[in-house]
Length: 434
Image (cartoon, rainbow, N blue to C red; front, side):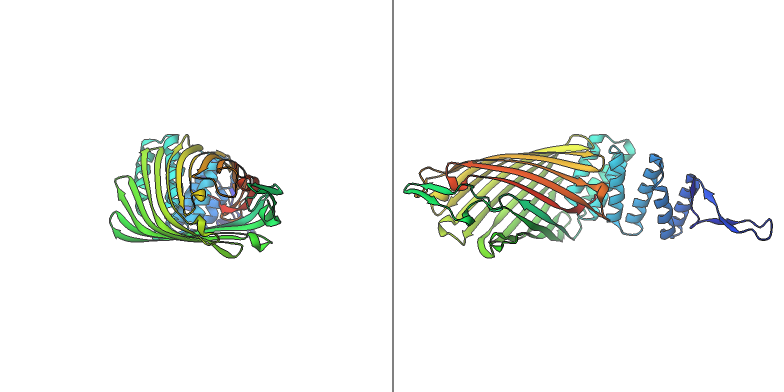
C-alpha cells in the first residue's frame, strides 16, 4: 500500500473536531489516479503519482510506473531525454523487456541518435519479440528514416596519460651516422589533461529518400604544458541516400589539426559510407575515403591518402553484442620514405551488467614504409597493439548524465626507434545515462 496525501485526502464528518487525514491508496488505485490525471492533462499530478509508484519494492509495479511515465514524458511533454533515462533504468533491471527496448530506440530516434537507435533495435531482435511488439519494432525501424533535422552532442572529462606525445622512452636515437641524444620534447612525456569532443549536424531534406547532410566535428586535448595541446576540426557536407533498407552517404571533407598551438595538418577530400542490414541482428558497414594532406611542419610528409574499411556489428542478445572491422590504408608521400601501406583489424564486445555497460576493444595494425629514410639504418616496419576497457555507470547518474571511465593500453614496436613507444591512458568523463 502507498500513502499519497499530496494528491488525495479525505475528511471524516462523523463528529465535530475530526481533522483532515491522508487516505492510503493501493497501487491499483494510484495507477488509476495517475492515468486519469494524464487523460485530463494534469501532467504534474500524474508525474508525481507515477514517480511514487516507481519507488515500489515490487519490480513489476515500479517497472510499469516507469514505463507509463516515460511514454507520458515523451509523447505529452516532449521530454524524450527524461523518458530515455527511465527506460534505461527498466532495462538495467529487466534487459529482456523487448517492448521497453523498442521504445528506447524510438526515444533515440527522437533525439537524433540513430546509431544508438539501430543498436537497440538489433538488441530487441536478439532477445526475441512477441507478435505485437514485432509490429512496433518494424514501425520504429521505418521511423529511422524520419530523420531529425539537426542535433549535437558533447563529451568532456579528464585524461591522464603516460605518453601524451606517443614518443619513445629511449634517451638516444640510432642513425647511420651515429647515436643522437633526444631532447625532452622528443621523448615520452606524461601528463593529466582535459578533453572535449563535440559534433553537430544539420539535415536538409531534398526528396523522399534523399537528404543533404552537413556535419561539424571538433575535439581537443589540453595540458598544462601547451606544447602538447592537440586540436582538430573538420567539416563534411554531401548527400545521404536511402534505397530500401540500405543507406549511402557521400561527403566532401575538409579538416585542420593544430599541435602545440601551431598548424600541423590540413586536408581535404571525399568519403563514402554504406550501411546494409544483413539481418535483423547484424549490420554491414563499408567506408571508403580519399584525402590530400598538407603537413605544415614538413613538406616531405605531404601526401595523398586512401583508406578502405569493412565492418560487421551484431547483437548477440538483448544484453550483449560485438563487432569486427578490417581496414587498409595507403599513404603516398612526397618522400617515399614517408609513404606506407598499412592494415588493421579491430574487434569489440559490449555487455550490460545491471546498471553498468562494459565495452572491451582491441586492435592490431601492421605498417610498412615504401623505402628507408636516409637518416635511419632500416626501412620503417611497425606493429601496433591496443587494448581498452570502458564502463558507463548509470547507478551513479546525475540527472540525465552518468560517469564513464575508460582505460587504454597501446604499444607500437618499430624498426625505427623514434616510432617505438608504449602508452597507458585513461578518460574520466560524463555521457548520457541512456
